[in-house]
Amino acid sequence: MRWKRMEVTGWGRTRRVEVLACRPHRLSEIPSTLAALNGDGTSLIAHGAGRSYGDVATNEQGRVLLTERLNRILAFDEANLEVVCEPGVTFQDLLDVFGPRGILFPLSPGTAFTTMGGAVACDVHGKNQEHVGSFGDHVRWIDLALPTGRVVRTSRLEDPELFAATIGGLGLTGIILRVSIGLVRVPSLWSTVHERRMPHLDAFMDAFEACRRTASHSVGWIDGQARGESLGRGILETAEFADGPRSIPSPRRARSIPFDLPPGILNRLSIRAFNGLYYRRIRRRGRIREVPLAEHLYPLDSIHDWNRLYGRRGFHQFQCVIPDGAAREGIRTILGEVGAAPVTPFLGVLKSMGSEGIGHLSFPRKGFSLALDFPDRDETTALLSRLERITRDHGGRIYLAKDSILSPEAFREMYPRHGDFREVLQRVDPEGRLSSDLVRRIGLRP
Ligand SMILES: Cc1cc2nc3c(=O)[nH]c(=O)nc-3n(C[C@H](O)[C@H](O)[C@H](O)COP(=O)(O)OP(=O)(O)OC[C@H]3O[C@@H](n4cnc5c(N)ncnc54)[C@H](O)[C@@H]3O)c2cc1C
Image (cartoon, rainbow, N blue to C red; front, top):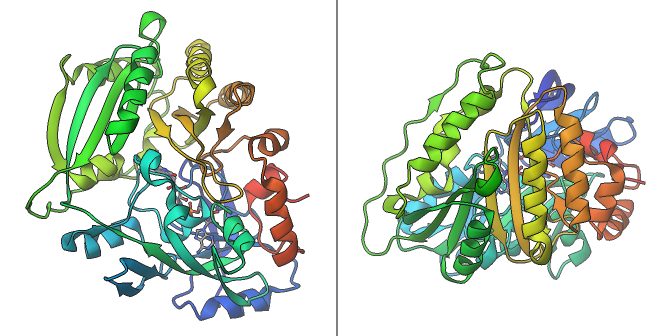
C-alpha cells in the first residue's frame, strides 16, 4: 500500500492535521495493510466522506485509510430487501441505483454524501428517528477487519458485543469491509412537505409532540437569535412520501462555493436579517408543497462546500439530545445562553428522537435534539463548554460525530455504556492501533 503525506480535516474545518494516508482500491488490500502495520507504533483511523464535523476521522501524526474508492454495491436480494455494500458507498449511490425501483434506505442523515462506513460508525439518524430508530437498527451484519488484520463477521447473533461496539463505534473496533443493510419499499421519490411557523419554543415543542404520532418525517429550523417572547421560534417541517405514480425527479444542479468567505460577512446583523426573511417566507397559515425527496432530505447538498461560508477558521456544530422530561427547560436555557453570548449561531435544527441506538456509543435517545452551528471565534470554545454544562445538567448528551470540545468527564457521564465499549476494545485492540484525535481528546481509552 502506498502512503502519502496529506492534510485532513473534519467538515467544520477548525483543525487541519497532517497524516499519512492510503487510498485502497480493493477490500482485499485492507487486512494485509493492517497486518503490516502491527508493531510499527503508529495508529490508524478510517476516513469516509469527511462529513463528521470534528475530529472522529482525523489522526494527527498518525495514519488514515481513505475509503472513497471502496464504493461498490456487492449484492442485492430483492426478496429480502437486503443490500451488501463496500464501506465507501454513499446514500446518494443507493438513491441513484435503487430509488428508481421504488426501494430505499429506511433513513438517511442530512447529507447524501455520507458513506455506509461513516453511517455505521456514527450510528446516524434521520428525520424519522422517532419511527424507525437509527442506522444500526437496519444493519444485518458487518464484515470487519480487526486491527490485527483478521476478518470477522459480526451481527446481533455473531459476537453481539462486538456488533454493539461497532455500531456507533467511531471506527475503533476495526475497518468495516462489507455492510448488509435492510432496505424498504417507498411509494415514490417525492415528499409532501408541510411547513408551519412556530412563534416560540412552547408552540414548537407542543407541535412536535403532537406530530410525533402522526408525521413520518419531521424536522424544525430554529432561529438561534430570536429573543424574548419569540425565543425558540422557527419553522416545523413535516413530510410524508407522496403516493401514487410519479416521475423520477431530475438530478439537482449543485452549485459550489469556490472560496472561503472573508470573516465578518456572517455577523449578528446579517444573520438576524437572514433569519427574519427565512421565518417570514412561510405564510402564517403555513404551506404544503410536493418536492423531490432529495430536496427534503438533503437541503444543504445543493451547495457543495457550503462549509466555506464560515471562512478559513471554520465552524463548530453543537448537537445535543435532552430527554423528554427536561427538554423544554434545557433547550430554553441553551437558547438563552446563546442569546447572551458574543458568538452568533447561523443554522439551528430541532428534531424529535424516539429510542436509544443499539451501539454502546450511539447518540440517539428518546427526547429532543438541538443542533446549532457557530463560527470559530476566540469566544466559541468557552460558549460550547457552557452549553456542555447545560446539557449535562439536563441529563442530555452531545453527538460525538459533531463534537470538537467535549471533556473526558462529560463524555463518561453522557455515554454510560463506555465501560462495555472499552471492554470490547481491550479484547480486539489492546494496543490501541486504531485511534483518532477524538479518542485522545476525550480520553476514550483508559
Ligand atoms: C450537512 C450535514 C448533515 C448531517 N446530518 C446528519 C443527520 O441528520 N444525522 C446524523 O446522524 N448525522 C448527520 N451528519 C453527520 C454525518 O452523517 C456523520 O458524521 C457521518 O458519520 C459522516 O460519514 P462520513 O462517510 O463522512 O465519515 P467520516 O466523517 O469520514 O467518518 C466518520 C466516522 O466513521 C468512521 N468510518 C468511516 N468509514 C469507516 C470504515 N470503513 N470502517 C470503520 N470506520 C469507518 C471514521 O473512522 C469516523 O469515526 C451530517 C453531516 C453534514 C455535513
